[in-house]
Image (cartoon, rainbow, N blue to C red; front, side, top):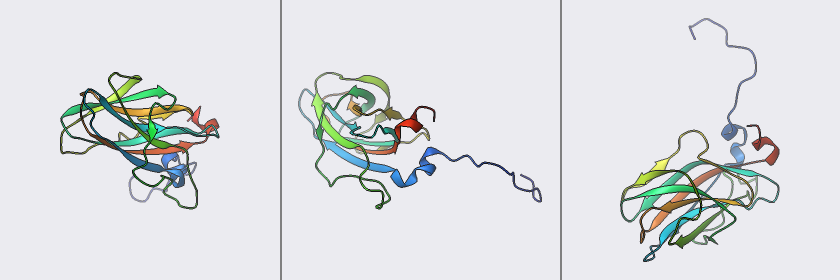
Length: 170
């Protein structure tokens, strides 16, 4: 905008991440390698209030070069990752937000593929395109799977719990 012109008057659009920033949550999980099995880590939506979880960033570290696939799975196919304290929002006054990190292994693919990233051994891969990577309804899981078997998978996930009625139209 050229100097001297007045700023526009009206509504300023705000992203969901900005509007609900106090509820932005994150967590991580590590699944060790198991012979003959693909490693999975993920996020289960355990919301009881109808909130959807919008996944905005994932980070993956692997023990060998592979491709990390993003998938949806109905239900909770894994076990709660207990390697760290429970996760919550970046604002401590908000309290516990929905979402729990899970880990498991499987010899076969369990879900519906929705994307993925390349991951190289010894290097962390971060993927944050600026829009939701996944929108997880209550009772579903967003999981990351190694294409190759017998690989350690370490992941970080950043998600935003959005109240159910707002999720339909936004």
